[in-house]
Every structure is written in C-alpha cells, then in structure tokens.
Length: 328
Image (cartoon, rainbow, N blue to C red; front, side):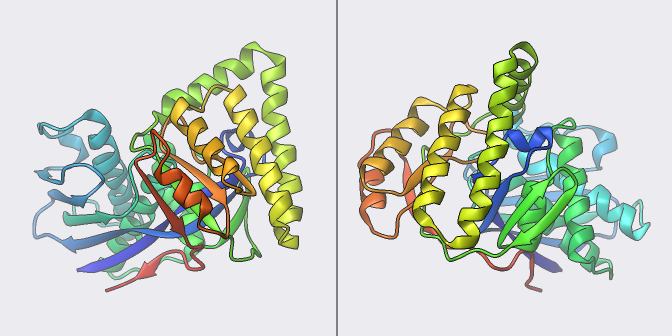
C-alpha cells in the first residue's frame, strides 16, 4: 500500500475572484488528508472513509461506469468522498495506462468537508500521488498539481481554479493567477481558524457570484477590486507587515460579503476576532458557512471565538511549508 498526505489551506486573499483570472494568495496549513491506496486483483474500487467530519462509511463498486453505489448517505458526502476519488483514480489510470486496475482506497482527514479549508484538493492530491506510486510511478509536483486540478475541474463542472490544488501539492504560500502558479516567501503567520460546523455549497455560491457579475457592472468591479487587494497583499506579505495584511483581509471580507457569499455565523466570527484585537479576519473559501481565518499572535481571538455563538470549533493553524508527503 502507498500512503500520501496533503495539507489543507486558507485564503489570505482572492477567493471567488480567482475564478475570473484575478490573482489569489492561499497558504497551506498543517491540517491534512491522508490517503492510502492498495492495488486489487479485480477492477473494483473500494473506498473506506475513516473520518470526513461526518459518519465514516465503506462502499465497493465496479467503478464510474456502474454509476454511484446505492448507499444511504447524503449526496454532498458522496460527491466529496467519492467524486474526487473517482476522478483521482481516473488520473492514475491515465498516467499509468492501466485502465482496468482496481484499488482499495482509505481516506483519513482532519479537514472539515466544504468548510473552505481545501478538503477536496487535499484528497485529490494525496489520492493521485498514492495511486500512481502504488503502480510504480512517482509524479513531479507540478504534474501532480495539474492532475489534481483536472480532477476538481471535472467534479465542479468547470468552476475550479488551480489555487487549491497547487497550494496543497507544493505547500507554503502561493500566488495563482489563471494558469500561472508560483510559490511566495512568507513569514510564519499567526493564523487562527474559526469553524461554524457547517459547509457552503461551492457550486451554488460560485454560480451566484457569476450571476451578479453578469447582471451588475458594479459586481464585476467588486471582483476586480478583490484582485487589487491581492496585489497589495503580496507586497504586505513580502514585507511581513501584519497590520497591513489584516487591514487588507478586512477589505476582502467586506467585498465578499457584498457579493453575497458570507453568512451570519461567518460575520459573527469575523467581528468577534476583530473585537478581540486580531489584525484582520475574513471568511476563507467559497463561504456560505464553514471557516474564517484571523491574524492574531495572542490568545485573545481564539478565546473570543470559543465564546462566540455559532462558532463550533476554533484552533490555531501553522503554515505548512511542505505540500504532499509520501508516508509509505
């Protein structure tokens, strides 16, 4: 069996706007998905999910040609736990030329599903890496990131960007603008995460922004303004200017809220963090529910979030300097 892990991520700036060619700056964080892949003697695919923030389950079926298996779990869970794995396994088969190979796939994840921390990207990256290595092929990181992106692109109906998968594959802070992806120098940021226990519907939220952008010129201008924030944020990141980074994160959250992708729980956590003295705070990911990220080197923000109605969990997250890790 080959086992790989890949980190989740937070967005300092740029989610949603990155879909329209604007830059984004995500950072890998040290919460990980671990995927083990073992070759079978038949062509079936067996997926065992130890922990995807929901009840674990095991399914076995003949592959995507058979359609989804008949199991009593939510559609969103099937999409997250199987859609990305199906796509990843198709990438493995394409790389190796072994079209009929089957696998036992085990997923263990510390990353909440749909919470804006990049769970699908981490699973896709780790699954492709472990699957190809199980068949004797080791991919370069750039190809691994590209194939994981293609997996997300297919599952998300062409609405994915390269940001999540590139960040998960390479680690650290990265800059993504269209097809151009590069690593950035970053200080060790004092990241605090607040999680409302829920999840947004990424496809619905992205479609909502698209509709606003097509209907209103000022919504298109809002998306462009997020790109301007990212470009200023890169300068602040390079200088290690925590105060300016926080100010720009606050601007970014306000624009995302104007585009309709925040929620009452996310806004409550953002304001609790700011009132506690955080340099800045914003939602991370698609929005609609899930997580916020704040900058605070003290314990004040984490303490405030732990008492904030609507916050189910809060924790400090370290920047992950490494992306995919090959464990076995």
